[in-house]
Image (tube, rainbow, N blue to C red; front, top):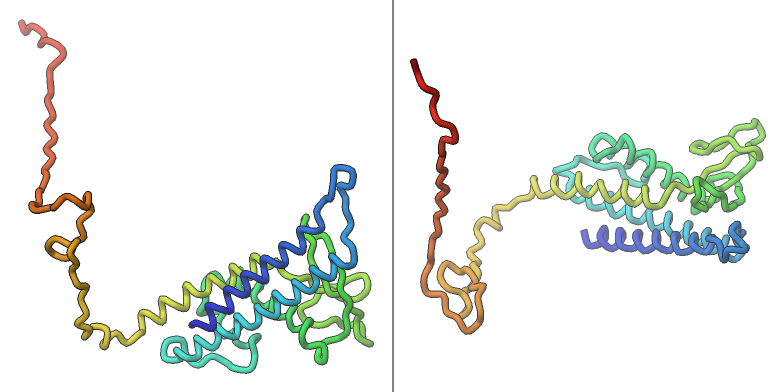
Amino acid sequence: MADLEESLKSLLQKRDLIQTARGAFGPVSVYYPNAHPTPRQQEALFNATHDFFHTYYSAVSALLSVIRRHADTFGEAPTHSIARFLTWWKPKGLFMEDAYPLLEKARAFRAFLDHKESHPPYTWQTVDNNGLTKIMLVGSPNAKGGIPEGTAKHPTGWAIMAPDEDLVVSALAVQLNALIPEIGANADIARALNCTWEAKATADDVGHGYPVFAHREVTVSDIYKRTVTTQVTVERQSAPSDEP
């Protein structure tokens, strides 16, 4: 669990670095509302994006490692393939109808970045996507006009855009709500039930181990119970009519 925690913390840091790099693309003054990023700024965003998805892969691997340690709870998870693991986890996770496409696209995008030997060549560019500048990988189709799985058609062949980093983080982090409660529910607590440890009272505690929330120079010597009784009085506002 410590490795998973560190991986998720690192993923959050890498997400923040993407947002910092993207912030450089904002307008620089009222005279230049449509500022164009410099090559150096574009490269900074690409490097931050690459680092984020590389760390994403490490975080998913750490999640898989925790799940494999608790095979008695989750069953035997597949190894050596994050793609197969995500497919296996799909019916077990939370909100996977929305989370799975994000997690899978993030995996596929990272594979293009880090496994060039098994993917076709590409170039990258920055694009505006609903007001957010993102990295998009662009490549040519193969000899038969086919494009790689997970990509979309593009005027030059195929393209795949980096999925939103905030949505990817949320889709991964929410899986902890399917992970930790299940581990706790199936944990062997027999040893914990036999624990004889008790909190030791201090000089500031008076009876039953409860702390005294009072001025330090005051001693609480009695316990009081207050009962509140509500009384309702009904008064007649009109006189009765005369009867014949």
